[in-house]
View 1 (spheres, helix red, strand yellow):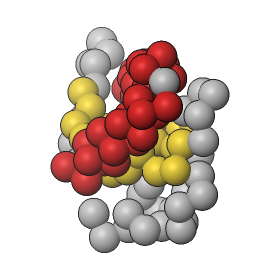
View 2 (spheres, one colour):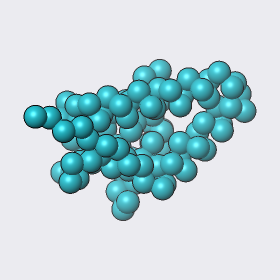
View 3 (cartoon, helix red, strand yellow):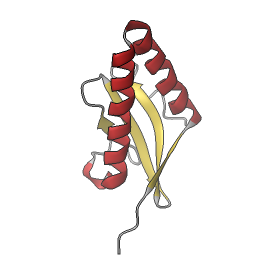
View 4 (cartoon, one colour):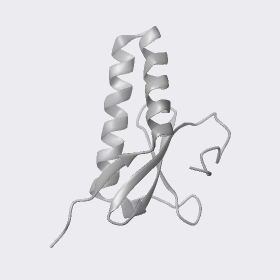
Length: 99
């Protein structure tokens, strides 16, 4: 029997998501909406099969956000997914490590 995992977003990941969506919204409401949908799809993909994603260190994995320069950084813990960061590809690597 398979158990569905759930995802929880770290407060800083929520702030990054909101800030990035706002940035896109200033340029195009459609781009902002597409960004949010792409992040949602990435998280749903992670929840459905978290083991398919490569580890970037001893406990964190990442999933690319389609059509946007972002990675969803996450870790698995106690049957759930904890999204640590919605990280822009150009931001310094590992800035989220202390979360």
